[in-house]
Image 1 (spheres, rainbow, N blue to C red):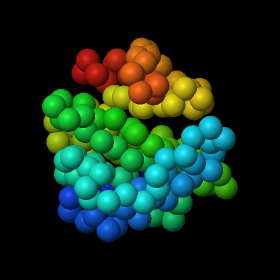
Image 2: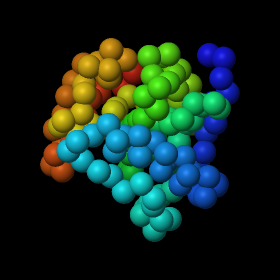
Image 3: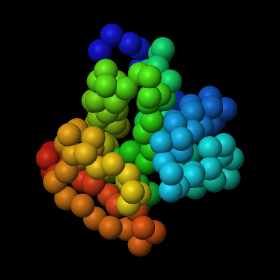
Image 4: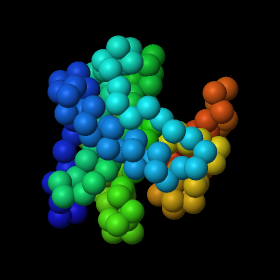
Length: 152
């Protein structure tokens, strides 16, 4: 990994967090013909902002947005991921996930779930290890779980 990774926590720097999350969600929205998530959020949209963070990479447009599960803070979920299409296929998503996994482990949390909408491409996530178990949520989203990390 040659590029610096930036972690932005919603509680510590909400303005920067909103900027990075909006960029990630915008890339996600552009890739989806079926769904559009609200890009700009307000602090009131978060019940516990200290457990919401973005992982971005210097010089790369996009990143991952991660939330710890309320009531189960030892589990972290990738809620959105987006890398600019001109910068894909360079391993940046894998680098961000690997960094976030180590970072969250130091906070006694496991990054072992990715949340998808039913039309999202599962292949990239399966390639990254999130393929062992699939759970359908009541809101129509799918959670892919990396059981190896979950059980570690």
